[in-house]
Length: 169
Image (cartoon, rainbow, N blue to C red):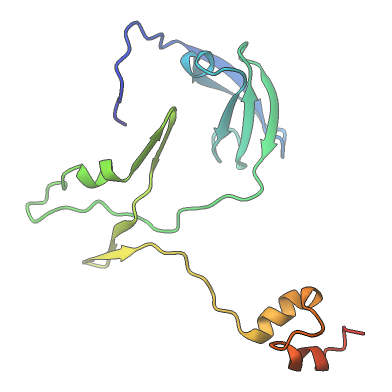
């Protein structure tokens, strides 16, 4: 991680905060930098990653007194499905960090690496692969079956399905 701004007399002390998973009630004390809490205006929202306290991911809201004031369970979590391999150039040395820096998202205390293109090692071959969302194309029948309650009785595109559907009055 790169330091974007140098501050003088930074307090690097830590505070121990006990977190309780809102799903399974597992308790664990984690050390957090005091500067994170002190720089916040009110509550600090902390994302507790899967594996830090238990097998669940959740958010905790910590006040200025380092007390947890509430929790929020995560309903849906995106998982990284692409396994990235370290890519070496012809001299078996790492490529320069320009690609890394171009794909970093830095916002306050948040850091994310989000490349649009990744190099994937498949067997002995390294290939470029653009990551795109894969949308399944639905047939007209599948669309009708999914949304039949919302389709108007006079809809021309679904006329055949409307006529033969026993669920409709």
